[in-house]
Image: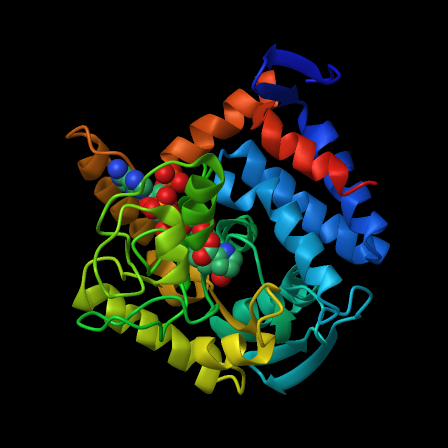
Amino acid sequence: MSSTVTNDAPEQVVLTLDEVFTLSRNVLLRHGMSEAHADAIARVITQGQRDECHSHGIYRLLVCARSLKSGKVDARAEPTLCDIAPGVLAVDAHYGFSLLAFETGLPVLAQKARSQGIAAMAINHCFHFSALWPEVEAIAAQGLVGIAMNPSHSWVAPAGGTRGVFGTNPLAFAWPREGGLPFVFDFATSAIARGDIELHAREGKPIPPHWALDSDGQPTTDARAALDGAMQTFGGHKGSALAAMIELLAGALIGDLTSMESQAFDAGAGASPCHGELVIAIDPRRFGGDGYEAGQARAERLFAAITAQGARLPSQRRFEARGRSERDGVKVPRALYDDVLKLLD
Ligand code: NDP
Ligand code: PYC
C-alpha cells in the first residue's frame, strides 16, 4: 500500500507500513540513535504495528524516547561477538538496545545451530523493549526451531505473594513449516504484557481483576493502581515457575541481571529494562536425520488436529492482521500519533 496519511475517523489515523517505518526511524534518529540502531528498531516497531501487537508497536517510540532521555542507554553502541563454544556465542550490546545485537548475532547463531544441531546465543547488557516473535520468526525463516526469553523489571509478584520479584518475562517459540508460516507463540509469563496495562491506563480503561494487585495487595481493575502495585503471573504457580526459570536462564546463567537487579539499576529513571536475553536455535534436519520429513509430517498432523476442531493456532490472529495491514495500512489512535509526532519537535 502506498497512500499517504489519511483520516479514517477523527480519533484514528491510517498509516502505510512505509510511513510507520519512516516515522519510527525519524523519531529514533532525532533522539540521537545511530542509523544502525534506528533501522533495527524501526523495523521491529513496524512489524509490531503491522501485526496489531499494539503494546509493542508505535507506542514503543514513547518508551524508547524516554529511555534515551534517561541518559542510561548508549544510542550508538556497537555490539560485539564472543565465540564461547562450538554451540554457544555471546553478543555484548554494550548498553545499547537489544535489536541490533540480535541482528548482529543471528547469522552466527544459525551457522552454529546447523553445525552443532543446537546452539545458544546470550545477548548481554542490553536495553530491551520489544516483542520476541520477530526474533523467533527470523530463526524459523532459516528453517530452524527458535526459542527466546528474557527478564524485564520486577513488576510481577510470585504466585501467593504481593510484591514484584519477576519481570513480565516473555517466552517465545517458533517451529518452521515447509512452504508456510511457522507455528509461533510468544507470551509474557505475567497475565498480560505490562505494555497492555499502560495502554489501558492511557485510555482510562479498566483491566480484568486477575491481571494485577494494587499496592495493598488486593486485585484491582484500575490500570494506574495496577502499575503502582504488582502484576500477577499467568496460570498461578505455573506461570510463576516459568518466570523464575527465565530469570535463571536469561539472567543468572548468562551472567546478566535479574528483573530485581534491572529495576535497581534503573534507579527510578523510567528507562526500558536492562538485562540479557537467551536465544536458542535448533536444526530439525540435524535432529531428524533420515526421519526429518516424517517429523515434519507428524507436526503437521498435530496442527491439523488443533485446527480441525475449531481451535486456532497461536499467531493466527497476527498473521491475519499482517495481511490486512499490508493491504490497507494500520490504524493508530490519534492521541498516540500526536504524542509520537511531538517526539520530532
Ligand atoms: P497475548 O496474551 O496477547 O498472546 C500470547 C500468545 O498467545 C500469542 O502468541 C497469541 O497469538 C496466542 N494466543 C492468544 N489467544 C489465543 C487463542 N485463543 N488461541 C491460541 N493462541 C492464542 O500476549 P502477551 O500479552 O502475553 O504478550 C504480548 C507481547 O509482549 C509478546 O509479543 C511479548 O514478547 C511482549 N513482551 C515483551 C517483553 C519484554 O521484556 N521485551 C515483556 C513482556 C511481554 P496471537 O498473537 O495470534 O493472538
Ligand atoms: O510489555 O511487559 C511488557 C514489556 C516489558 C519490556 C518490554 N515490554
